Amino acid sequence: MHNTRRYKSRIGIVLLIFTISIILICARLIYIHTCFHKKALHLARMQHMVRVELEPKRGDVLDRKMRKLALSLKVDSVYAIARDVRDKRNAARLLSRVLKQSESFLYERLSRDKMFVWLARKIPEEQSAKVRSLNIKGIQIIDETKRFYPNSGLACQTIGFSGVDNNGLEGIEAYYDKYLAGKKGYRISIRDAKGREVQAFGNTYVPPVNGFSVISTIDEVIQHIAEKSLARIMAKHRAAAGVALVMDPHNGDVLALAIQPSYDLNLFNTASSTQKRNRAITDYYEPGSVFKVVTAAACIDSGKVSLNDRFFCENGSWAIAGRTLHDHHGHGDLNFKEVIERSSNIGTVKAAIKLGDKDLYKYIRDFGFGLPTGVGLYGEIGGMLRPVNSWTKGSIAAIPIGHEIGVTMIQLAAAVSVIANGGVLFKPRITSGIMDEYGEFIKQYHPEQVRRVISEDTALRLRTVMKSVIETGTGKKAGLTRYAAAGKTGTAQKIEPSGKYSHSDYVASFVGFAPVDNPVITVCVMIDTPRNGYYGGTVAAPVFRDICNAVLRYLRADQEAENEA
Image 1 (cartoon, helix red, strand yellow):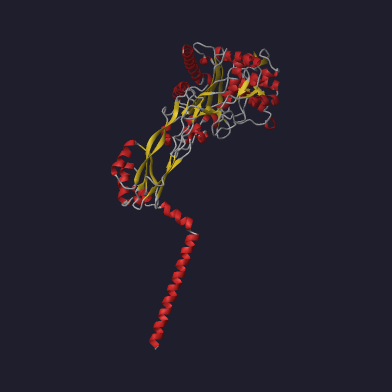
Image 2 (cartoon, one colour):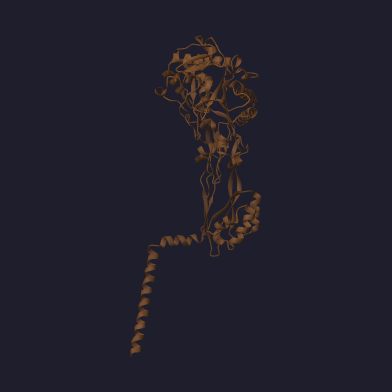
């Protein structure tokens, strides 16, 4: 009897446990079916689905004549369906020899519980052929595109570059990335229990949308000319850096922007931040005597100074506002035209005093200094121009001759173009339009007039003065072979970390345009810390001369070819 009771008790406990288990299992099934259904279904599907993103072809960057400055070519990339790779250790060992990557890195990626993982992106054709020959199950190759720059370092800081994921990182590539990049597509494949792709069931294909092309205002030939001329002087004078900018004065188009030091865009990962910097928009410097053309334009346009007004230049030394102002060569009486021709600091300051600080500031601002130009590149700064109420007593003796003010090269080129085109400031332009793969424009950037700065008569008077600078003044080495040119030299002391002006480091510059009677190009040159000479008329003027001679020959030949056609 006792044993029977014990037996029945055990059976009851077992039945209770069984019943509770059934209830828990049913509850779990109900939970999965009602609450976890969508997630469980997603997980189940993912066991049999592979999603592969399809990269679009990035749009080209073209010069103004549709020559390719940047393009994308098809290359192979390697990925793994990690769950299909059986001997992961051996696969990592074999792949490391071909892909030139560490075995530990590849093993870690192959060990991930994923259906898709990148192993190597955009590899050479010989590498992808070797990967295929290994015939490792789960290792796949897909087409992607790689950015290629056919001219290596040409206009490198302006064009910029894009990264491995097809995103623009510098220059035009970055600023117009939303047009260039395109839109990714994808492919979803259904796989059976053995991991084989089922071609006829459930596959999804969304094609990528290729990017648009950007048409720049750069002329490849003019860019070559500017870079060659700048590099030659840089080497001769062992300079630290340099910029040569060529602009169309009648619309603000940047035809060439040469910057040294430069780098190869195809090897951008090896370049330093110094090489990548677009100094024409990111750096400002005290312009020195080239800024006198702005002061002269303001004085003449205001009507307070004429070219025939005479100024006593104190024989080269003048005490003003607690400082002594010097000229490189002592002068007595000079008319204002001669003041600019001979680059007299004293005569320029005396003319600016007649103009007045408020009017001077207004003209400087109207010429575009103190604000970014909006050229269409990231990183542009506005330079340095303090408001009049922040000027000191000595500012009126410094700013008119290019001190206590910081300008960028793009600002300076736009300002000099005002004189070349008859008095109008144009917004500098680095791109003219966006074009689709069928050659249709989806967006165009038209020349944009900012404001009239000076009268046409004032501009014509300044042209005459700047022509004399080259013919009889400080810019004789800028003289051209077949045309008359107009320009202005500049030599500015660099500021040392102590805040004092250096007596060994200078910035040499030259700005101008040609031909004088009908200007077609504005050229601005800046040489940073030259050796074996440092005057603008000695160092920078020859770059202006060489660029103008070659570019005008090219433009003339180009025009003749068009006329014959």
